[in-house]
Image (cartoon, rainbow, N blue to C red):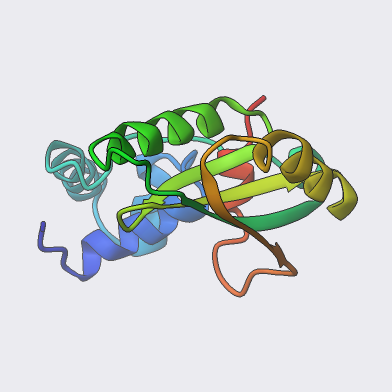
Length: 160
């Protein structure tokens, strides 16, 4: 893991807040020469601390309701097929428009972040699209009522 000093962290905080800042603006905010800021940003990119710059979509484009979905696959008769089946479910979920994020959890679990215009739509989507997938042992949906940290993640994950 790359070692970051106070200046690197300050640069990252500013870029995280607004990736459109110019090197001059960052230098001015931090009271450092532009050449120092340019060099540091270049080094952060070379070390893959900064992989890319992106956008977070505004509130209008984000889902109004969110749920965390936990799926557990039933172990097939031939246990060697479990890994392939989990990979198939993950790939299937990743293609669905209401699925914002998909991750593996343990040997037979999958976690997904589901979004929709209302909680009824989120529940309907899960009921009609996901619960009908064969081979699932457990399907649990938990509402997300708010974020203490990371609220912007939904704007980052939403497809347009």
